[in-house]
Image (cartoon, rainbow, N blue to C red; front, side):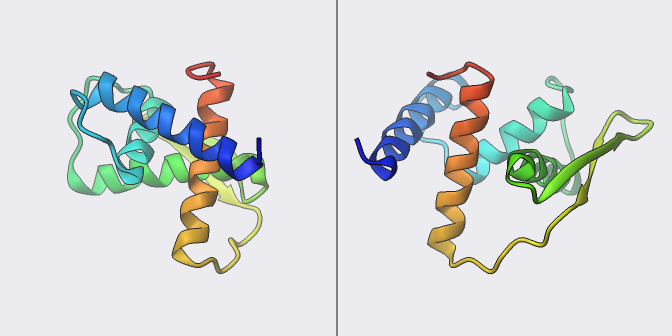
Length: 118
């Protein structure tokens, strides 16, 4: 199976699984899944977040997802338990479609590592 086809199949399966578990079957979009990863990485699962905190959660997720690609490195946890990352390498300029593929690939890899999918 071609790499792109395998990614698409894994993404579709992951998206359905997450949607069934967290959105009553309503298909979760990329941003919602990134937010979910941010909440998971923060570890404060049963908390309500303000709008600016939700943006911070998405930032945490993106840093964590792109860490294996060498763009970010975990730095420290602050006094409230929020993880902080430092930039190792500036992200290249990517077209919207290329960004989407990179994030989907990183998300699939993340959930493979967490053994949520196989």
